[in-house]
Image (spheres, rainbow, N blue to C red):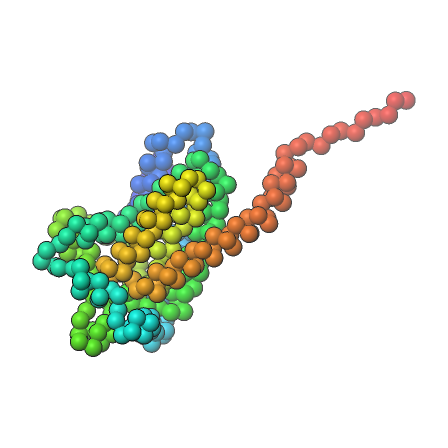
Length: 299
């Protein structure tokens, strides 16, 4: 309880987007058996530390000189790849009507918001049922966040909804942030309060899409646990990618980069664990077995 109260207090006094971790700690205290509390702390203290460090450092990615000269390069590359058109603008021109929100607007917004819960729920499930797979998941997540953070500083990029009109289209068409009208239609006050809690440490850190990278980690994590789970995880990842582009949150390049980073991180983390885990286990086992006293020879 002290840990939960401390997390909530620190988040309220510093950065409210950490409030979710305090609430998660309270939830864990209520539902996790006492006998597994130590295991929970050993598993999720590193996990939360990784997220805290990532979020803190990410907020500085727009303060370098590169942020003023490279922030629109991804948009220009995307326009070149798609023959002068931005997929976000094309999708919104075909599907989006700000005066008549449709079911898929709400569905894709909820898919986007699920990023703040689904990957962490999968982590808890893996820790509870498949500890070895959880270690693989945590190592992969740590690696992909590290790579993503490095790219944020090397290529600080505006998301589509923050791009200037001259980048969006020569005809001055702009990418709309669909999430805002959808959220306001559901209750603007609730949306603004939730946004203050979740936060957006640096919207210019958009390349690669960590939303996509973390979401695409789920199919890797559930692979081999049944075709239905794998199919659902892949469908969820596809919906997340579509939502990010359609809602104007990320370019297609951001989404693809996120998937590539995740794939590399999963295999690299797996190779690292395969190489080093046996030696760690053997050292622990050796330390746990008491030495056998030598027998004295009969006189």
